[in-house]
Length: 312
Image 1: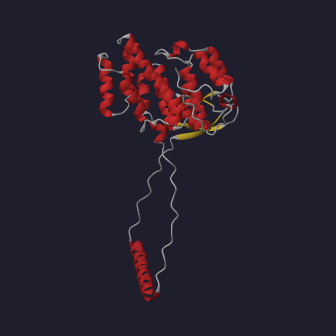
Image 2: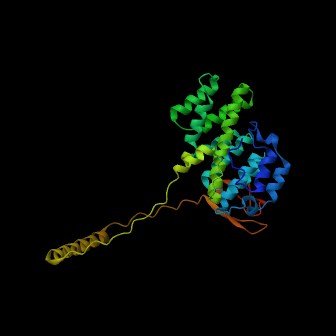
Image 3: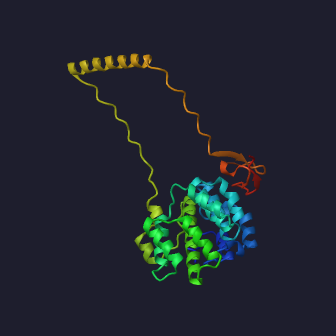
């Protein structure tokens, strides 16, 4: 079952999840594509989708909506919305969506570009719990690889996913692969919802709630750095101070002369082309930042969800 607290979600969001089911889905989520859930998601505005919470980050709210399209069986809509997501969430969401669209090479490419994966620790722990020493060989090899690196391995998991999909694993083995994919989705949805609204929708048992235990990706989120206030050096006092001042003055003059005699510095490096671009929705006029990796493809407006072409 989805590890999301339905009592915190809005009635609209709960209805959308309920139409596709809260339980463990099959490997191919497109086979359960729900037209009614898609219609609700198409029509609902952010105010209603997140009520009673308020949206604090529109891009992360779009990430939540993109993941809901994925859960309800519409990964193509997920990929259109992903163009305007923050880089880390965009790459991870696209990796999941392309896997469901059977675009395996593209899925691996997205994961390869991730410099940091926020759920490595949790997914490694789940893998160790689900795969025992008595599991079939492909599962044990995958588990051993995870234990060796002490981190989740999305490329190896994608290969395991393909083996399960083509029937190379037993029913028990396929169920393990389904649970791992389901856990990936859970963790990403919880992260995006928290960033979008500031509200944690993780479903916890009462004992866990009382201990206020948080997953590692929440504990390890970098805190805002506070810049120290610069302090002016104390002025030197007396004759010693005067001599020091004269000494510093001479050294500054000498440094100035040396600088004037130095050869001109090399021409500044050419600035790197920005990775994102601001696009205006042709329907509602809303302007948002989209990744340039989507040039030549269709993207969706964050406000009205209209699909339009990102001109090359």
